[in-house]
Image: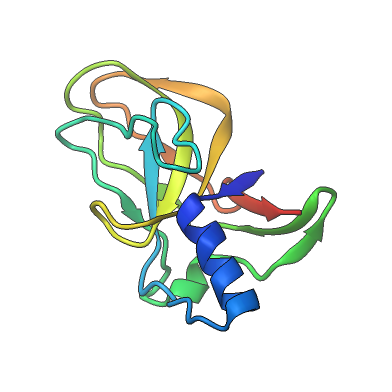
Length: 140
């Protein structure tokens, strides 16, 4: 299950109830966290010299990086349509527990965030890879 960020909550409310534009991001990036990012982006994003947020688009089109929404037991869901692979960890052991989706490769606005089912401890040279369908955003 994913949660809206404060930024996206305000954007959806302003768009749907107040007629204000909500811009569509050109690209969506997956960020890794070692603690809960929370709606207000207060968590700890991974700190590693090799780390970089990963582009979720497939073939350059933002929509092709995700499946079409489908009914899930918990609500409406989309999942990643391509394998997502991060560079090997360079600086030392780290445990990844959460993720967030941003509209920029650095800084930017967080859109959604969630917790991985199981935290993953990575050592130097370990590569985090998420299979197709391995990351779901479910809204209810």
